[in-house]
Length: 590
Image: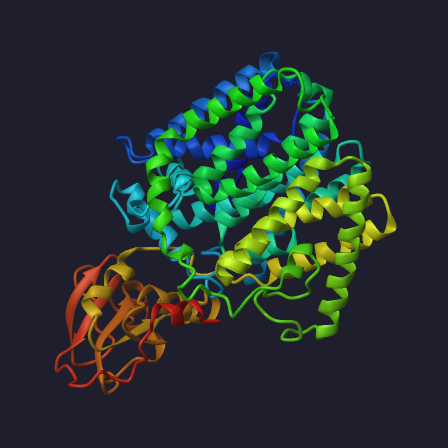
């Protein structure tokens, strides 16, 4: 818990300081709640730009520390004005932190988020481990965006925080920074509705659902899209922002973060929103936002963006061939089918977003009534946004809806679901900006907030430690059935069966309890794997050099990190009793 909290506080503090200093340098002297997203974007760029230097992440930690210290010194010497906004930011941050901690409280321990929902954290942990060791990885070679992984490696090398706790801390930090960023959209509202609206916008149902499965990239991208839309809104509506000579640079910095977290696909949402917004502004002839000096400001922002992403351009080209983008592939990932777009509106009373209406505890009618209510509010909210000239918000709405339609028609269910996640905070914004003071808005806040908490409470939490050694045993057990003997805690409290099955995918795998092992191994097995400590606990004896086998008739084959691999002395002639665990089967395991 302490390590996870330390990682969360470190990422949040660095993001706030560096982001606000960047906003002040761009010419906006007042505190801006865009600073969390801008700061996280810059932290991602700094860490990824330095993580492969000697030290394998230590330089990244030092670079972020120096940037945060310089930002604090600049702000302390009059580089910006706080305006008392911390009085609102503090309760939002605390409430978001408590909400994001709900999975750990519900499960009774801290560990790998999403084990059992989504196995993808396995490859992220492996990529982080390889990056921390200065080695290459499959994700690295494929051009996969590794900015978030670099942040985790910096936490690991700089503060000694484990990779599991580092990823947890980063994921929780994003859940805290998103509601803080949403505060910028509700400036001028009374404190209570402003706090409530910011929390629901930043932690909408689909964002909470993807948080629950440990999907930090999608939640980061949703944060960056939300912040980008709000940055356009600030330029259009705030005199302070319009007078800033570098008023479009904050949006460019947010786009930089999107590149390092989501590669070039992340820019589709931002470019779409920007093009639609500029088109509306020019069509309606509103020079304050697109007027004198705007072209120069835009070119400077573009220059800053190009310079900061230049090192990543080659990897962005490589990422074009990533398997997820293949529309002819299976495209389901861990899903059961297409996800309803109604979930983007925030009222979906299910702890598992993948389920169809009626499959959970709530009757199907409850889903349809909630979706209908949210849909009516969304249509009404967009009409009010148009009358209030909230063209930046409406541009974001059009962009995210268009991208979802494109993903639904030309992509896979997996990519379409991601588009729903990214869209949901912007759609909530369109509902709440005009309706937050009205009774219907408060009903939406209660219903949407309750659904988000339900998703968070249902999040599975896996093992608290990680070693790539288990995945490394896959080549050794490619033939024959393998029995993994797990501790009772791993199976009963940490969703260990799903975790083990995914780590050993590609072979024939059974999972059993070490506490029930004894005698001779079951017929047809060829290999037995167990964690060293669990064997010693189960047998009541242990030695630093020899680990007693859990069955008779086994010979030691390999010791890999905390795992021990034995082989049956007389291997069976057939394939054995364990089922073949294909990649798709492991991903879809519930």
